Length: 142
Image 1 (cartoon, rainbow, N blue to C red):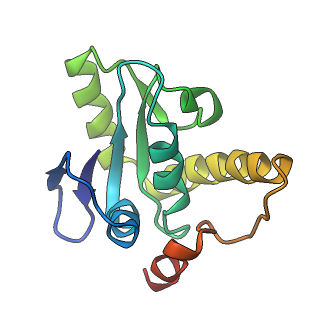
Image 2 (cartoon, rainbow, N blue to C red):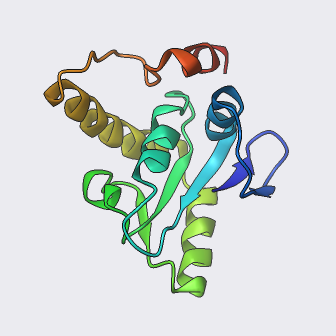
C-alpha cells in the first residue's frame, strides 16, 4: 500500500515488509490516499481497514483496484484498473486534490456499508470508525 502523508505534503511510502497492528493502523490513519491495487481479487481486508482507520473529520481517499472483491462493497472508493498506469496516476492526483466535503461523503458511504456488514455478521457495531481494540487509541488521538 502506498501512503501519502498529510502533514508534510505528498510523500510516498511503499513497503512490502510486515508491520505490527499499531504501526499499520497508524499508517492507514495518517495516509491521505490509500492505494490498494491487486491485479485480481484480494487485499479486501487491507482496503476495509484503511477506511475504518480514517479520521471522520478529515478522512483519506481510497484508490481501489476494480478487480478487488471489496470494489463491489466499497463503491465510493476511486476505482482503477491497475494495468492502466496513466489512469492510476490521474486518479491519485484526483484523490490528492479532492475537497474535504467529497472525501467525507465517500468515507461515510463506505462506513455505512462496513457497519451494515458487521451487523449482518452478528458483530457489534459502533458510531466510531475504528472498532478493533488494537486501533481504538489511534482513532481517538488523531
